[in-house]
Image (cartoon, rainbow, N blue to C red):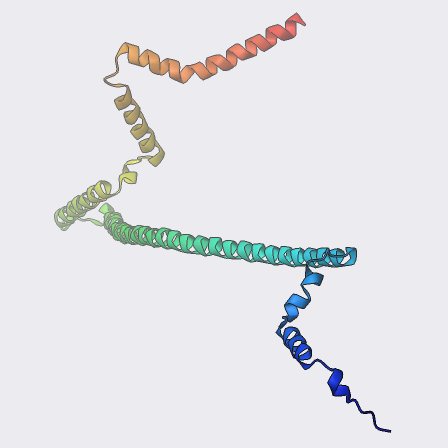
Length: 227
């Protein structure tokens, strides 16, 4: 049996359309605003604290890594500066040293060559003097041999005088004695021109440390005796 009333007659279509429009216009964020505005639970707070501590540990490890990298870069920069400075210093010292030694070597070689020439001349002069044999002279050639011998003696004397002028050690000059003479001359020039007061001040400046040590020794001895 069919009902004389249809179900559609009892449905308010205007109310349903308004309700559907209102529901569709709501934002999902607005629907969850109640959840966001609520107080977090203990588990949520502990989870957030753990995440924060983990991030802090990661940041600390990253900071330590950056500190190590910075220290390594500073050490590399220091070593690079040391390399550049040492290279320039050694280039300067070695270049100067080589130049000085080359000059000294050249002077020594020249001096050795001159000494060799002088030595050869002295040996030749000695041989010429030793060749004079008076016992071989006779009545016929003694005048010629005498002239020849005197000429050899004169040439030998000239060779000797030239060697003495060039080499002071041939006169028996001691290099240490020369240094001592130079030192004595320097000291004498230092003392010259000084007044009595200046000499007294210099003497006091030179002797007061010795006097102070002696005074301290005397005081220590007196203290030891009084004990």
